[in-house]
Length: 230
Image (cartoon, rainbow, N blue to C red):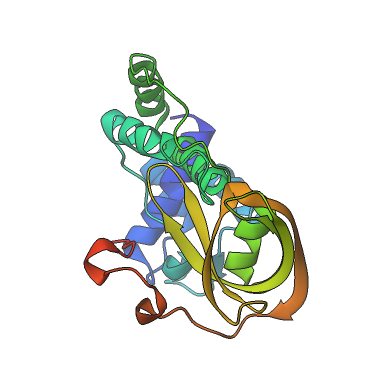
């Protein structure tokens, strides 16, 4: 077992028995290395931010904070590629960048052999087109997450531009376009702003306190589906 694999296995061993401790001698026997090697490994893990501490005494040893460490990510190659295909469809949405980052993080913690197989499988998948064509400006996406008021320059269907302050409340999306749902202070009402018609945008310091209600949408409820993480 190389050192990287041993460090990972050490954390998992400590997680499995937490909050009970494991002594350096026990861990040395488990991983067939010296106690000095275990002590160096534990020090390296602590230095990288893993919450491990030593409990003194005859029955003491090393303990990891289970609540602040994660179990291994056991994605199969097919599951990783399925996520990549789904994320491809996020192109142009407010979450395209975050989705790509999440996939890279998942691939980074997959076992090397599984990650390599995922890359091989992905190489056999070919997609046509780049997903939705309408981009969502990064300032808009950040403002929805941070609940910040925006100052927009927006072009209507006829191309006429107007400036207004809006309170971002959420998004409405379909396969072709994404819309910013916001309370328009100019019109004193809820409006949908197609993101590719936003000509200019500036985030203001003011925090949005208003909440989006489904009843505020002038759309039949049966046509609107809220996103769920379950």
